[in-house]
Image (tube, rainbow over all chains, first blue to last red; front, side, top):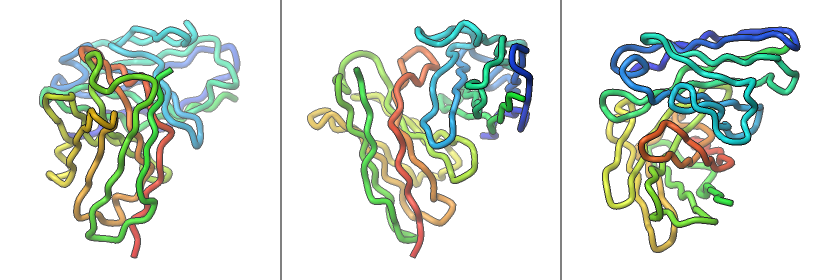
Amino acid sequence: QSALTQPASVSGSPGQSITISCTGTSSDVGGYKYVSWYQQHPGKAPKLMIYDVSDRPSGVSNRFSGSKSGNTASLTISGLQAEDEADYYCISCTSSSTWVFGGGTKLTVL
Amino acid sequence: QLQLQESGPGLVKPSETLSLTCTVSGGSISGGSYFWGWIRQPPGKGLEWIGNIYPGGSTYYNPSLKSRAIISVDTSKNHFSLKLTSVTAADTAVYYCARRREGTSALDYWGQGTLVTVSS
């Protein structure tokens, strides 16, 4: 299985909004609602930010939102803050009942 | 509060078997509908899904590991384990254990990760 495609890096200024894409195929992202997003700060374990395309766990800021169109899922962060600077990963289930991560996106807050 | 903790050797020789255990505290590994799995991250690189297990049920693995991975669960000890055979330097990574709720994509609890280096 091939890794999902994410941009290597995105950047934005405080207060702005950014969107990170996660592109797969109809056998993974496009075929299921099971896409989640994780934030990872250096040296730390990943943290769940969005699950099942657009659901947000309790305790996660409502500045984080998710969506999907066709074979591409997206994570949007509005009102960028300095602490949002981190790596972000998507993961999707596949038609083989396995899971595949995206390559990761480094978010820089300018 | 549920906690997951990885443990195992930090150094493994090439061609040998990597063995890690994830001990779950603050909850039962067999209580509720959860999958328990392993994810790894080579230094400076992205996350890779290794596989997961449903206690009393099925296991699923990343096909790229070519059957080298085996995940098992011991409900009496409230832990689950990973064995990865015939390791090479490419298996050097931080290994994380995590829990996923059945019927969702939510990996909601993670261990802190443990670095395993493959070197002679």
